[in-house]
Length: 456
Ligand SMILES: [Zn+2]
Image (cartoon, rainbow, N blue to C red; front, side, top):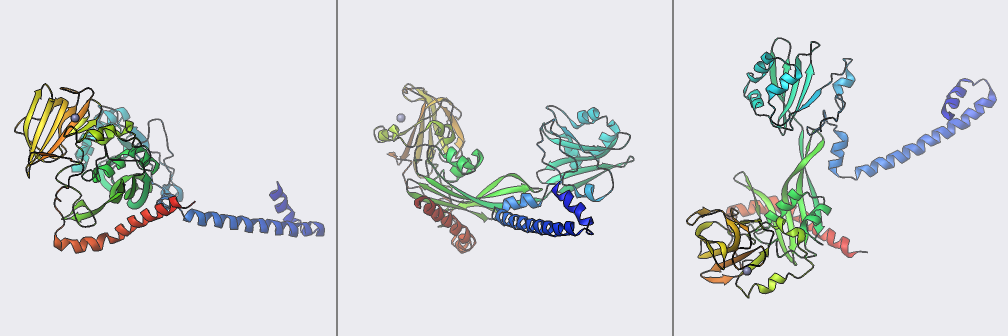
């Protein structure tokens, strides 16, 4: 209302009274604009402080939204499609079709009323269109039609970063692929464990998959089942992958620090012969001949309280092994490569498996509910050899694990393990040069968080 008066008043400049009023109003209006402009500017510079990832999302609108659109949710077909805005052509609506369980492209074409001839033409185009014979439930097809309802255009994500586009001009079909805009950003995060690693990960913005990657990275150095304590910390630099301007998924870990009971471990990704591997800053491979724990912590940590001193620790010496309490059925894997020298049942050990490794090392696993390997079989590190149970002399489901070196029991969680596949002398210099910025970044992240927690 106020503004309308103001503009209509502008035309009545002949009346002096009004003119005066206008000048005052004009001044107020201009002032308002200036203030508003300053406020906007401040707001904008604030958003600049946000992460690069956010910027990408803001600047680069997706041409079309992501694939996993639940049925029933419709999105305007022209969203972010500039051609629809800049040309006078009517907006062509894409129709979304999500593949049902057991549905083939044949089924979809029939459902859409496209002819069998069209289907045949499309499938016969090239190797990529032949892939359409193997579509999966949940995948998205997008269609545009000619006026007679026949197929005009079809779009399908043939893999993570490419669309397969089919055009049909009424006479024949044409296929092309369009590469989607993929951007990988690095991001960093950190966390402190108060109850579980998963919870600390969640607070740090990591999904469970990322937490598992982190644990797997240090699984040769740290027993994530028994050795995690309140106050343990992690610092992580990892990839975030954006597709067509929207966040798609997390990528790989680039570098990480894990501080376990005051002891610091670091892992840095480095390509050797085109394969990404993780190394400690001294060039030793993170992979070692033995895993610290022969079972996956994710089955256990949910009800494990690191604040409480684990009663099982006291018994380590008493009975020459480590007991991992775990739900019945938790998979148990061999801690290292080797050969099964015993897979049997006995009154005391229940179902048990013994494995002979290199360097006169034997590992023993007792009380399985069932075994999945046979005597004489070769096994690879991480391979499942049985499942946690309470067979034999066991009151509750648990894994009893022993580690013997030259026939003498050793604590597998503290024994020094020989390094496996360290970097060659000739690679060390390049490794240091390439990874020193990352190492500095990790260390900066660590000192920044220490400063943040120690200051009021
Ligand atoms: Zn035991």
